[in-house]
Length: 88
Image (spheres, rainbow, N blue to C red):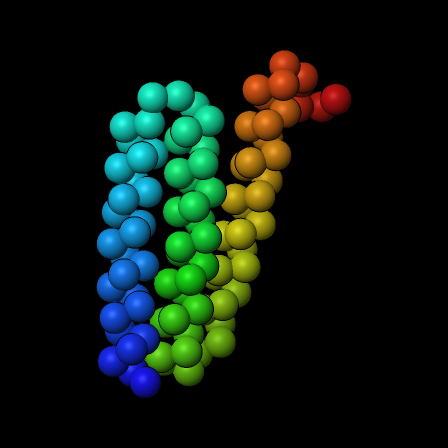
């Protein structure tokens, strides 16, 4: 079981590197934001795998906080791209 989780962890890290490439190279702001969203999902997956391997549940709290911040960032960018001010 632990070997399987280790392989999954390496796959998640490799996919995170691909998302970082899209975030840095992305031609438009929406492309970069999609890369950031996917990167956030992968980070939560990495946190979950590490939490299962180490049997420490507080690592899941880090993943939950990351998801909340990513969601707020996505909403902020969507509002900005629609041409509205942040206080509307």
